Image (cartoon, rainbow, N blue to C red; front, side, top):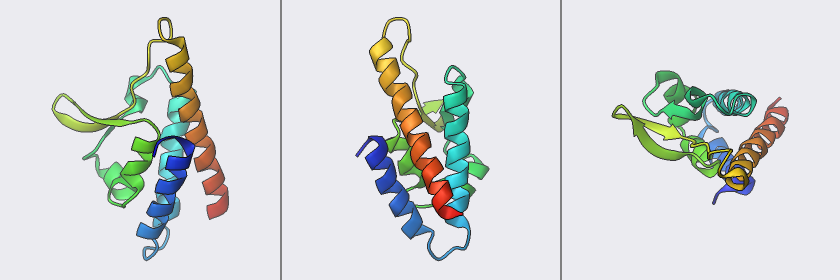
Length: 124
């Protein structure tokens, strides 16, 4: 399931997966919030829109938990590779030739960020 409802569903899975590890859920939500904040603030910056699946910090905070990687997929990321390195990638549509698609893409990023902001409030 994609979109905000899919993100919420995956956050529930993430919460269950981290239930036995104190602080793991809030760490994961905080890391996801940082990632999506950067993308929304700088959508043109490709480096914010690709996450190396084997990056130690990603794995520690998000990737090792069920639901963590899936939040990215629900928010429109896809699996891919850059220079043979497995990544999660959010591809920006061309704003000049695909304005509607670009708006949908950006709206999904903003909606995901809103869900994560609400979840951060719930964690504190």
